[in-house]
Image 1 (cartoon, rainbow, N blue to C red):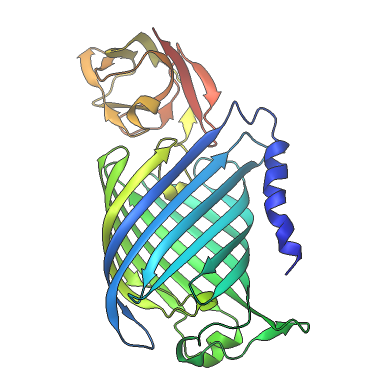
Image 2 (image 1 turned 180 degrees about the vertical axis):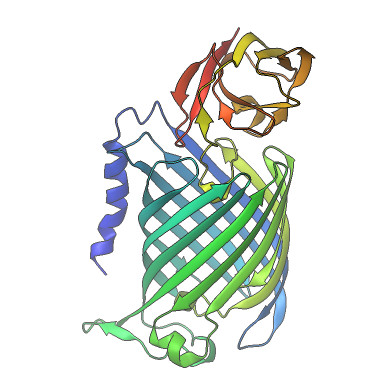
Length: 367
């Protein structure tokens, strides 16, 4: 268990080696707060569960043709009404570039604890992702190991009684593998998602009768670009490291988007594909109006940092002429436009730049 201690250093080294990483810096995160009833396995009791999670990510420029990412999170929850559980994690990943499909490998460390039990975790993961329009799919495989300090309360149903120990220290270690898949639909102000996870490994799972299949369905309604209402329901897996059983749950809460603009989480924040601008051109850039000239079309949309990267309709002002009449602050901005639900393009009259998510965006200035 000593080797994984070097894993956080790997993420820092990757970031340090990225040329121009500060220029391409992408910081983002979210804060979730929710509560709802939960019925716990094994103990067959029901109580309210309160959860809060703070997560963030750092994405610099490319390294050797790959896209590094460093992400972390901190969580706090009340479990079974009498215990408070804390958890944290730090993960470094390398993604293949691509706006629609791609793969990644990652390593991470973390920890969990209650007033009676603590554990250090290490994790090795890999996965693939794909998207079709507003829909996305992720499939991943993760191997988790954790060691538990001697002492603490009994695990649910004595399911963790069988463990290996490290040398003569009495430290106990458990390993398991998760295969997960998540599908979702991003409809702008609304997001729908479904997750299924299957777990294998560890004597505790094989002989303890603990649940090995988890599922969740969720929906987010974004009231504002940075504020959403989240509803979810599912059946969680047991947290073996802190002797917490799985639970059937329902939850209602809020989500705050922090830092970089919110984008479809299933595509890991990757922008839609961008093609050549063709006849599309930005002809006017003022704080209260953007003017676009484009091909013949029935409808046109724009998205940029000034819309939190959510598509917004353009208003037709003439034959082949469109306008965005929202507020755009003075300064440097990025945008993409599309016509009749086609591909997003970088309009002429802007400077095409790497948006830091595997796509291209048009850089322009409002004075």
